[in-house]
Structures are given as structure tokens and as C-alpha cells.
Length: 124
Image (cartoon, rainbow, N blue to C red; front, side, top):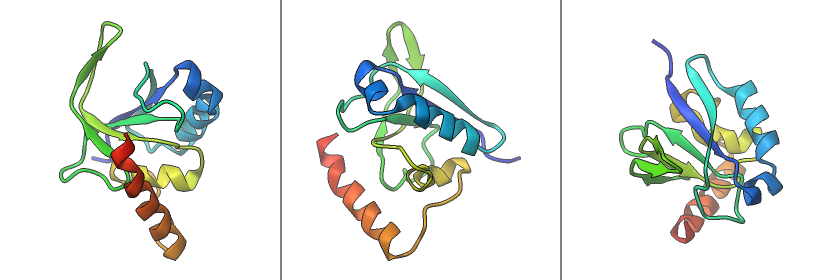
């Protein structure tokens, strides 16, 4: 079959200020068949959103994101997956290629952006 998975978008007040509603709409438009987009409570780190959790984590992890274990938030259980920060544009959504989204531009600019993202992960 095709890709399956869930993309959870943080809907805390800070991520909402950062544009979570627009990000959700964009991801719903871009999501391949079999991948659903849902809301989640705060994923942290606030201020670098909109933040998302993509699940399940692909074998070997995903570039540009941070793997997290399953967690309970506000009484709901959320699966293990990969947290990505600052998902705003279709090229950001390219980080979700392991879940069937169109991959990031692989030009030099895409590589630089990915290197920058990876360098930011220690702050997550």
C-alpha cells in the first residue's frame, strides 16, 4: 500500500500565533492518501513553531526532526514519532517525505536549510 501515518499539529496558543491554522490547512492539502492531519497539545519548543509530530517514526529517524517516545498529553496518548519545528511552507513540509509528502528541493539551498535545521535540534 501507500504511505500511512498521522501528522499532529500543535494548537497551543504560541503555535497558533505562529500560524498553526495555515500550516494545518497546507498539510491537509499536501498530505498523501492514507496520512491524516490532527491536532495535539503543546509539543515544545514554544516560539519556534508551528511544531508538528509525525508518526510513526521511519526506521532510522527522519532528517531535520527529533525522535520522541510515545507520550500522554491532557489525558490522550500520542504515538512515538518525530517532532519538527517551524513547518510553514511546502518546502518545510518536504521534511515529511518519509510519510509520503513531496520531498524537499534537493538543491544546494535545500541542503543548507536542512543543515541549519539539524543544527537547531539541540535546542529542542
